[in-house]
Amino acid sequence: MQNTELSILIVEDEPPIQALLLEVLTPKFKCWSTESASGAIRLMESRFFHLALVDTGLPGMSGISLCRLIVNRSPQTVVVVVSGNTDSQSIDEAMKAGATEYVTKPFDLSHVVATVERSLARHLPKSVA
Image 1 (tube, rainbow, N blue to C red):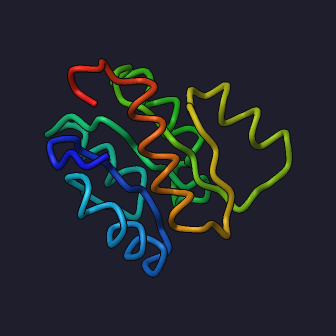
Image 2: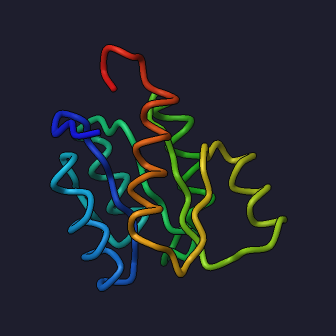
C-alpha cells in the first residue's frame, strides 16, 4: 500500500525509534511525529489523522490514556499501540482503550509497516484505503 494522502501520527518519546518509524513510513504515508501526548493533542486539533501509532511509555499522559482520548475525539482514527510490555494485561488494556493492534518492542520495522497497512486496509472505507 502506498497512499501519501493517508496521514499518520507517530507518538514516540525515544528519538531514535521515532526517526526509524518516520523513515520507514514517510515514503508510503504523510507522517507527523511528536514525543508526547500533549504534542499529539495539539497536532490533532489542527488536522485529521487516519492512523495514530502510539507508544505506551510517554511523559505526562500514558499512551493508553492517549489512545482513549484519540478514540473519543476522533473515532475514525485507527490507533495502533507500540509497547515494550508483552504481558497480556497490557495488551488487553490497550485493546479495551480502543487500539486495533498492539506491536511489541523491540520490533521489526517491516512488521510495523505491515501492521499499519493492515490496520488501515481493515478499518478505513475502501474508497480511502
